[in-house]
Image (tube, rainbow, N blue to C red):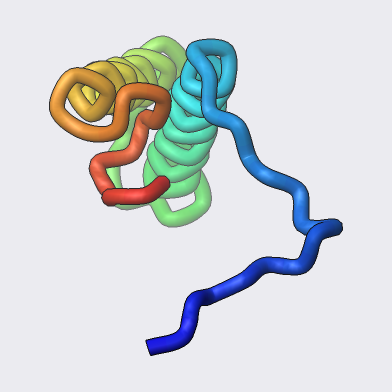
Length: 89
């Protein structure tokens, strides 16, 4: 089996604690925004249920806290400088 060679101009991704923090912050914030949007759409135009502004933010906060906890657990049990449980990420 022949060796696999990357071009010399290929940039190497170096994962550090700062990269982990940025990855985790992005995942947590995006979870909050998507959860808030989902609750707002379901409670507003979709009229599936009624939720106040604070209930919407509370639901999004719970989802974001779950994402934060998952990212912290991923660091403990997965790749040290990644908020993902997938290997090699």
